[in-house]
Length: 407
Ligand SMILES: NC(=O)c1ccc[n+]([C@@H]2O[C@H](COP(=O)([O-])OP(=O)(O)OC[C@H]3O[C@@H](n4cnc5c(N)ncnc54)[C@H](O)[C@@H]3O)[C@@H](O)[C@H]2O)c1
Image (cartoon, rainbow, N blue to C red; front, side, top):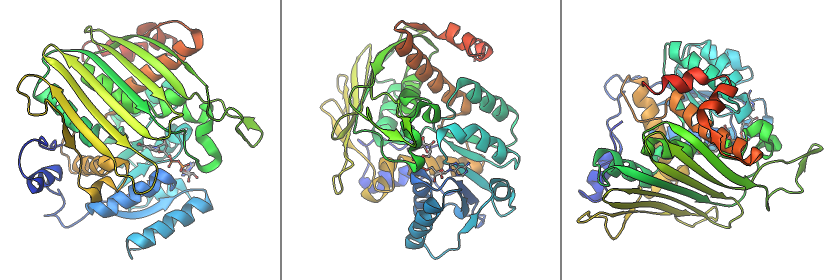
């Protein structure tokens, strides 16, 4: 995918043009038709973003929950007069010839089975993060993807947040910092939101807090480190959130804070801090290399009418962002969901549908983010560092760990 140009170059109009490469379907006149599986919060975001971008049409949605279907249909009517098929059966929906590509936005513990059902169609898939709740399920997905006749793109769309696009460009393409030595990432935010049947309040459904939410950050750290994680140590647990929360007689068991340290094969050292009992959202990526420090940050809020603020700072002599520059997308894109990240995720998916290469996460990269997250959760449980190679072996994915040394 064409990366947005630096926020430091060109007029605003030129930058927006660079943000939205050419629609690959403009000349063919035939837009791909999407099926959205799971019409909850994220399914509705995919409906909204696909309409806003306009490169693909939505054929229909499928969801067993009447309330989700109703809400999604109400949202759809506000967006467009176009018809929307409501499917009751997943196999029927995926197999419908009118559907060209499938977006899976169901709860984490359903991803593997829903993907297997979707894969019978041999159609391209955009699968929400985290790819699965266990490493065994994730490995099944990687194996399936290797022989699959179409693309399977993973929903690690934080890669497309404005500040991280700029940061990754500065680190990788411009090599502004020289060789990277340390990476420190953090997220401060309010507690997990309500979900249908409160699936995200239970580790067995979500895969655990570091898997569920923080796979995004481990993906970014892995991309910056450009190496294989070797050792992980983490400390964390449940301090404030959902301590007394019960749903259908079951007590919530999810963690709400953690500190993680990761050592990579190439000597890069990384850390990640999570705190989920804050009022507002703040996330930060700090990368330090031979020539200086880069900080990519975002201040945001769940409060209505509170705009987000993202910034890039590159403390390298003569770098134009030495004192920091604001970064971001136009308001209409930022407002569409996840500060524009989902909008660019859809651009990437559409480009992949047209056979063009993009920087979206592959199943292998998604598995690496899951390996780090799962190793960190394991470390929290046993109170010791985890050797990632041994951990992969214990989880039946030693071959995947070993083969990565040559890839
Ligand atoms: N990329 C991101 O930043 C991001 C943000 C939020 C959520 N997510 C992910 O998106 C997925 C959905 O999360 P959400 O917040 O929309 O949850 P949600 O609870 O709001 O919606 C999930 C929907 O899936 C439906 N569903 C359950 N099983 C299904 C099945 N077998 N077939 C079809 N529909 C099914 C549920 O009825 C519900 O309507 C999760 O994997 C979550 O981790 C990603």
